Image (cartoon, rainbow, N blue to C red; front, side, top):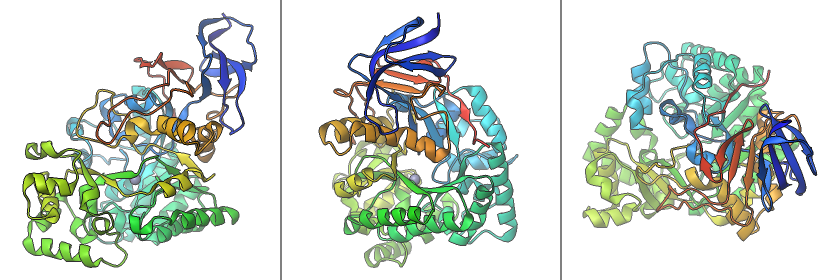
Amino acid sequence: MDYEIIIKDGRIIDGTGNPWYSGEIGIKDGKIVEISPKIKSDAKKVIDARGLIICPGFIDIHSHTDYILPGSRGQECTLYQGVTTAVVGMCGEGMAPIPEGREEDFLKLISKIDPNLSQFEFPYHTFAEYLNYNEKKRNSANLVFFVGYGNLQWAAGQGGENRPANPEQIQKMKGYLREAMEAGAFGMSTGLIYAPQVFAKTDEIIELAKVVAEYNGLYFSHIRGEGATVLKAVGEVIEIVEKSGCVGGQIAHHKISGKPYWGTSKETLSLIEEANERGISITCDQYPYNRGMAGLMTALPPWVREGKNEDILNRIRKPENQERIRTEVKEGIKGWENWIRDESFHNFFISTVTHDKWKDIISKNITEITKIKGFSDDFDTFFNLLIDNELNVMTTIQSMGEEDIQRIMTSRYQMVGTDGSGVPASFSAGAFHPRFFGTYPRILGKYVRKEKVLTLEQAIRKMTSFPAQRLGLQDRGLIREGNWADIVIFDPEKVIDKATYEQPYQLPEGIPYVFVNGVIVVESGKKNRKSPGRVIRRPK
Ligand SMILES: [Zn+2]
């Protein structure tokens, strides 16, 4: 036998953006070893791809699958979409480093994300140990790691106070960052709406990003504002990349949030275009939905969110503070993105709660909940939700306009990312965002086939070669001889997402085969238990 697998008779879309061509692919030792119109050699397994598209595996440039990796090999719902590589450690919040003796403290931070993690015993401390741990564990798909700014702050002793890092903390943060970059991190990420990252000033981030630049690393950011302050926030990414000398910057899940600001994507995309013309490489990613997802507490003014959870809860419980928050939402605070005023409570849909007495209102919006529960007004519902569930309330927020979504989607600087995580297909807690299960097939089915917003070739470029180029991966993201055989085979007439806001845990249709490093992980639309994923380290 010459090859392990031959894929016959398909239409190849190679990831460059070029039109399809017909061809066959021979796979051996994890790699694509032959591409030709008709392969003459034999193989142990032959897959007939007649009527189907063969393209590179999708690189999810913005994933939070690291939050669920400790408990599982993860990536199930994203594998079904064709994601063969996930970029994790996003929004400034990853899973390492964890200095020795501080495991319990770290668990308190992340069990907010997944209560199941509270039992986890961390078998690593440094970033290098973290990467080695993931390599040994074997995941289903490949992983690319960034180090989170929030992790650096936390490791250096920032406890959530509203003050800049002191010189000693900056030195410590730099040390942890260097260690992560040495270990193979691709760069540093920030999430500048989350405390304590929200308290970091631009100059402080530039200081750190200079270390990233020494390693030819990248700066990825969930920017400081996506509505009223979005232009300033895009400007900040450009400034950080320019002043630090990072090889490039990425605006995460780019969107225009809040009806009063719809249309501003014209200007944000111009800023990106101008930066590129000046030689500063700025790109963005996006998920194709009109709702975002966040912790409900993120809608509180920043002063309420200072310190530990207990401090925050005590503040919310005080009637005089509730009065103050009401007034501030009505009147605004300079520089603060006022989500409640911009979106109104009826656009906040509850995804998850922890307290039993709230379980009946999942996927309802706050205005509906006020009626159901008989609260005096929506603010009252809002405060009670946060207090009863000890701040652990996730929400999807209907905040985006379709025109902005499509304008960003068709920008040549846009690539696709889920901003989700690969939860198991059997997942059923609450009502998470459908992007976890539907992002890639939604683009291919809704935006390519049905609405013709993109051609198939353009869409696939944004899912494959473009993110590979952003990361500097030379051997993935394209159907090329010698490249790793990360491959998706899908039916262009059938591919579609099934996940909705009401029923978010529905697998997509029309994606019969997914290969990771030459190994079949989804066959005839069914995931197997193989875990050929690798930890990809930043090329030196
Ligand atoms: Zn984010």
